[in-house]
Image (tube, rainbow, N blue to C red):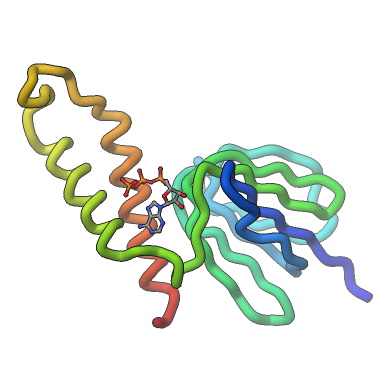
Length: 141
Ligand code: ATP
């Protein structure tokens, strides 16, 4: 039998995926990274984006909110603050998060109460929202 990978996607709340896979593609900080069986051991930081894996010729996609990936002994472990299948993504909520982040980035750098707005946090929230919406669009429903 051909060698396979095991993919585990773990958030603080739950195990989003624990599945065999023939290949995995992940959103590493410096671009998409593909992993096949017998890949060398490594760790990589991830940005918010689409994780894809193939099993029996069928590709599955999910959103991951960044984090870290570890590859060792044909196992890919992804530790991320959030991960969702396309059908679990609440589109209206992601759109609201996107609008909120855009307002923060476009407007004054202080709140109505004069407190500074954390631009890096707003930019990260924007990236999560954009990638959730794009993953939702890949879901086919
Ligand atoms: P929001 O501002 O809407 O909370 P966020 O990007 O700050 O968005 P996260 O901190 O990434 O949210 O996630 C917090 C929890 O909410 C996680 O469990 C995540 O899976 C879930 N979540 C966030 N946004 C959505 C969404 N649009 N659809 C489904 N689940 C979501």
